[in-house]
Image 1 (tube, rainbow, N blue to C red):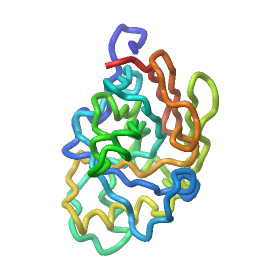
Image 2 (cartoon, rainbow, N blue to C red):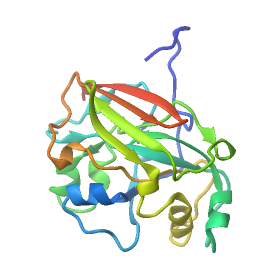
Image 3 (cartoon, helix red, strand yellow):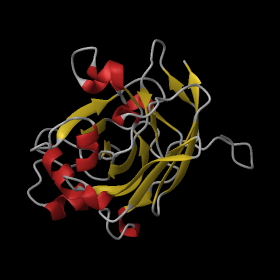
Length: 225
C-alpha cells in the first residue's frame, strides 16, 4: 500500500536479527488448537526475512491450502538481554511494541513433520507495524485489546491481559536460552479466532485488517506466490 505521497510504508524494524515466537500463549487459543496449557513458554523461531510492511501483500505459498492469520503483540528489544533475574530487568530491555501478523501455514507447521518453523517462515509471513511505539508510551502492555478481521468479518477479539506468560516473563525466560540483542523481535502469541479453530483458511483476494489499542492498524491483501 502507498501513502498519499506515493511511498510504501515499510516495517519499523526492517530486518530483525532474529524473530522469536511464543506459541499457545492464550488459553482460549490453546483450547481451540486442541493443545494443553503449556507449563513453560512454547518457543519457536521465524525467519527474519518474513518481516514486511503493515500494508504489503501477503503471499499464500505454493501448494498451500491452510494459510492462517494471527494478530499478536510484538516486542522489540532495545538492549542486550542475557540471564535476566527479574521482570523489572526484562522490561528495561524492551524498546517498544508493534502489531505483528504471525501468518502461518498449518499443514506445513503441523502435518509435515519436524518443528513449527517451516509453517511460519514463508515469504511475507510477518507484516509488522505501522509504528514502533516506545515502551514509555505504553502504560501497561498487559492491558491492550487486539483484533483482526477477514473480509470485514471479525475473527479475533482478545486482550493481552489474558496471556498465559506476560511480556516481562517472556523476555526474562528467553534470556536464559539465548542472548537477545537490540532490534530482535518477539511475537508474544495470539488469542482465539484463527482458521485452525474451524474457520475457512485464507484465499487469494482476501483482506486482513488488524489493530491493537494504541499501536495503530494494518491491512493486507492476500495474493498467490
